Length: 189
Image (cartoon, rainbow, N blue to C red; front, top):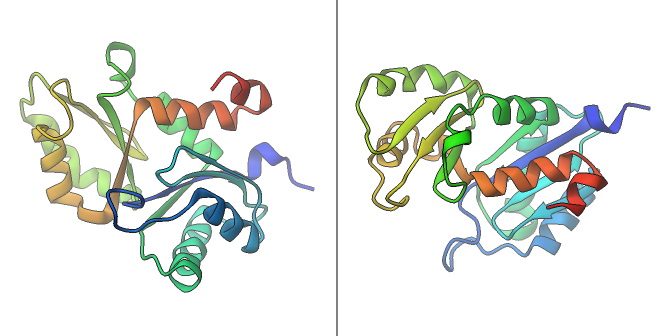
């Protein structure tokens, strides 16, 4: 039997439960993933963050299965990005903006296709002050001190990537990390 830590994955559903569109109850989402054969399904907040044991299913395959089931079973079309626990740990470790930022105004923009990070490299040459931008292998990181709605960095990233990226604030990413760390971490979330 595989080590659970090696088979855990994190799914990010893009654009669900924002306003009145694409409403998905987290209980329904957990059941959906359970019906797909995933185990230990746990959600964080109400915005489509799921930690689960995928067994031997690769993250890309898990994403396809979840996207298809969302449409077929719940009638909701949403882009799904899935990272392995190891990839998620790298995403956390690669954020060079984290130590100096308020977790509510620091966003990780998780890339659906990690190769897209190369498209973003030219943005590093621009001055975004007082905002900041950093890149990792699995995500772009945006510091938005004046809020996300006024952010020029987020506007540029959105224009370049469209639905190929989904964002979460650093507080949410920390909650997911604690959940992946196991019962001790979840108790502290």
